[in-house]
View 1 (tube, helix red, strand yellow):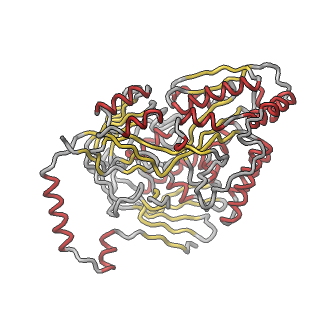
View 2 (tube, rainbow, N blue to C red):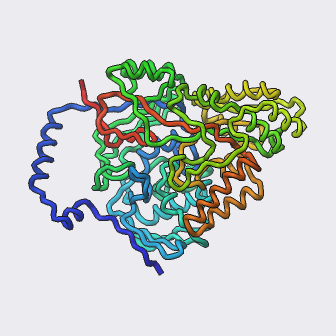
View 3 (cartoon, rainbow, N blue to C red):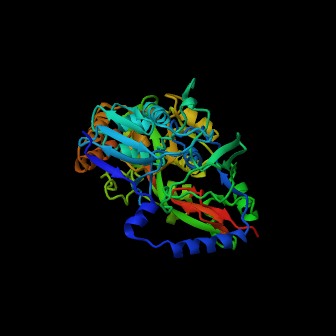
Amino acid sequence: MLQRKYIILTSLTMCMVAGCGTTAQNNNDTDVHIIEENEHYREIINVAITADPPTLDTVITSSNITKDIGMHVYEALFTMNEEFKPVPMLAESYEVNEDFTEFSFTLRDNVTFHNNKKMTAEDVVDSMNYWLENSERAQAILPDGKFTVTDKLTLTATFEDSALDLITLMSSRTEMPAIRPSEVYNDINDEVVEYIGTGPYKLQEWNHDQYISLEKYDNYISRDEDPDGYSGKKTVPTPYIKYHIVTDESTQLAGLLTGEYDIGGVSSDNLDQIKKEENLSVETGRGGGTLVATFNVNNGIFSNKKARQAVLASLDLDNIMLNAYGDEDLYEIAPGYMDPKSTYWGKQPDVDFYNKHDIEYGQELLAEANYNNETVRLLTTPDYQEMYNATITMEDQLKQLGIETSVDQYDFPTFMENRAQESGWDIFITSNAYQVLPGQVLSLNPEWGGAKDDTFLSMIDEMGHATSMDEKIDAWNNLQDYMYNDYVPSIVLGQYKSYVVYNKDIEGMDYIEQPVLWNAKIKEK
């Protein structure tokens, strides 16, 4: 029996309850409207991104670029507000039973897709079941379950065990269970290739390795609440957003300086120059993430734990992070896989040989691993400068340890393809955005780096089946300690802070973990 009910009041209802006056507000709205009618805003915002996304199907990839673009095209049942708390987006309300095994969702009415089809529970059920079946994180965190249609605007989700994290997981930007029309799931192979959502923008054109162009969806129906993080009203004042794929950092910098690009990323080496430019600003986001080195624990020299421990003991992480990010203010050295500022998940593991740069001890461990001058292959991509620079720095440190190395570099989509293979690499480094839940951490996913140790998997399972927050926190802390002191499938090299460079004339842009542009506009000069 469903006993807990969560209902979202519209702002009109809230005003009725609070007894808000309306006449003065309407006059103010009219004044604002008149002012804006006399001002002219540009038709397009130009964004420089570092790589071509491997896909625009947000469910099947961990690519941040896919998520950053996709959140303007797709919407989910829930999203996160500025405090990273789940709030409804396409859902109107939901109920859940006491043991979190049965959920009932009521949908907003009159929401349409980019093909002008009205959204129904059938579309949502097909989308959510596609997510359950294809999202590696959903499969890792949630028990077996299924969504079913109740009526035109109501659906039910049932799980074999407690799905305590369901709403939080569905709300996460890095997860993004996009709601799409049922027909896009017909006759698909590995991924959805019709990129149709309910979002404020729709895909206009994708010219691979050149640009992705989005155009305003004229029939978009926004929520009424004030903008708050990823939630609330989306006004869409700018008709077009164009994401230019610019893999060279110097080209991005030049484009920002000349005004060709309104938003972009530059090397931290150039931040002092940017701060002197009267037309550009730098903003640090409320997010960030971890720079992580992942070992191939199943093939090659690093299938031996002693070899992995040798690398952990010998690394100079300050040197790696400085070369990766260029400015000590943009990173800190800490081994945890979650945000150190997190109330629940921020406790750091106790690691004996973290950032000790103890080459002598590392060589002893390497000898115990019976290392015999095998070549260690480091996989990387120059499309992400911090990942590439960290890889080159690590290569130098591995040579100091006495390890033969080679670096294999590819464009980002090819890097992601090769990373997913069981062999052909020994170490890869990625910058991974902070997650809302520990179960979303990529290093816990056996499909990410191949970590399949029985104890490791059982500890993940124990955390997933925790029935209280205290149990889950304890399980997470124990898991992190095991990962560093016993298993070592990966190493957090450090914690990075995100930042963006943008045109000072942009109004209405929010920068949380990436630019949020559905309320952004740029005044014509």
